[in-house]
Image (cartoon, rainbow, N blue to C red; front, top):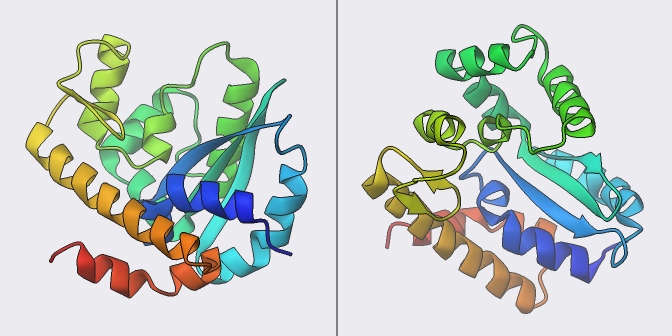
Length: 197
């Protein structure tokens, strides 16, 4: 089963993950507009996992689902950085646990907290200095706002944001032409080669 609306949303919001440029993205789905999301995720699970992409509903509050779409190997590698481990430890994560255990803890923190867990930036692969800046300033006083709030290297962030924009344009164009999300993932070499033209 395929779902054109789901593929369009995932293709737009998660293109850098689909193309292997970013460890993870978080996507919000309205429960009213897409109440069948858990079944859709289940339908796509096997095909996407063959491509190294996993999906986990990490929060199902009253009105929305939050879906984490991630590349397990990239996310694992990112979270193993010493500075990321220090921050995760502060928020009660077992840094020697598996990635699945860390995601389970993240889900618990979404369930029990009244605000967004600040460590979400780590799970989304944001630069660690920017995650620290967001925590320090509570989301205020950033130097640049794009795919995340930038507190450290603005020029590097601009380069990354531009590459994500090109990636998103590529993915959206392929989906508009009628390609499925799995077919688009198979074209990732075309997308990444265009990043450097």
